Image 1 (cartoon, rainbow, N blue to C red):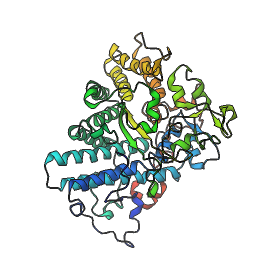
Image 2 (image 1 turned 180 degrees about the horizontal axis):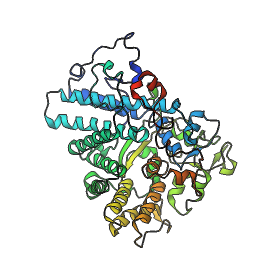
Image 3 (image 1 turned 30 degrees about the vertical axis):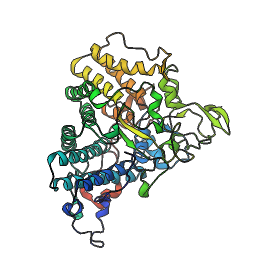
Image 4 (image 1 turned 120 degrees about the vertical axis):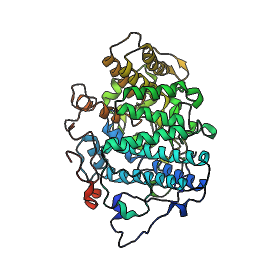
Length: 503
């Protein structure tokens, strides 16, 4: 589905809660879904509008995913001339006025608003359940996907699971406990698993399927440390991989060539359309220039740049390293090593800048179908959750070895012995650490690492420990596992207090 962009009937019912501040001066009036949604196609347009919010500069095009990358121990600031708001996120000294947070917060709620509008519209149509329920399921998936990100970043947040007929009704909304939000997320994903199709025409992965919903349920349960259910959902996806068309891509590089589009390994993607953009940052993908090399022929910006330790400790015989990094690049037509880069003399992330497809000269407005979830992650979830629930077995070891075997495949040919298969049976704690490290490498720079650091409470080890890849003495475990709620939202609506601890 090549980005239908912001073709939504509801541009935003909730543009962050601060949008309600001048209701008396600019009355909005009451909204009625029955007047807006006449046909299933109208509902589908609202759903596509939600995808448009996700595929925007504020979320998967830059702000949100950059914040996740900078917060991890895999990505550091390169060019220290970049705006201070990015350095603050990276260096664990941000406050509630951080500009990145204030930009992406309302866009998640705009996405949720479009999903809620679609659900209400579908429920009001006179059509069969076979027509209506899949539409509701897709919208509920989007809502759960959005809240799953919000809750992991902010903790308790306002939970809105209904169509807002009167914007005044949410002007003084308060936060909802995380436990209650998680229950809503799980129920939405379960409904999506029941009613979504197995596949979409042309096997597109930018719309969810039953397999997508089950994969996200596995991830939610993993985050909640509900190991048996995480394993059950992941195993169900693995057992039904042929039904959903899932498999590991033989050549790891193919996952990061924009013009390749969706691949069998993809479970859910965020789809950008090359060389096109719309208002409000729609379809504006800046991740290639943000991670690309400043001064190189493709004109990157050297903002998101791993530390040297991230590069140096990764074994050179692991094919994924060379797919993930550029350690030399053409400058004025001459190949130069990273020691001669103009701005930041470190190897740079290559996953997004190397093959951006149809795009501007710096890779902006790319053709990437960004992987939000892929089959490799399901194998790793099954390995971690299975070991936690049932102990280390040949089965869970086999899931990791599938990933490692693919990592030895250099462009279609097995030419390496690294990473080696696990051939003995380690203890549970050792095996879980192995899986976490394999996740770090396999999913490098794909916006997953911070969530692993958070859920396993690894911050003191990876930022303060003697072997820290990216030392940050300002990291505070009592504060930094959550982002601050935007100050402007609390100023408008004090019911959102208290602020997260430490801010």
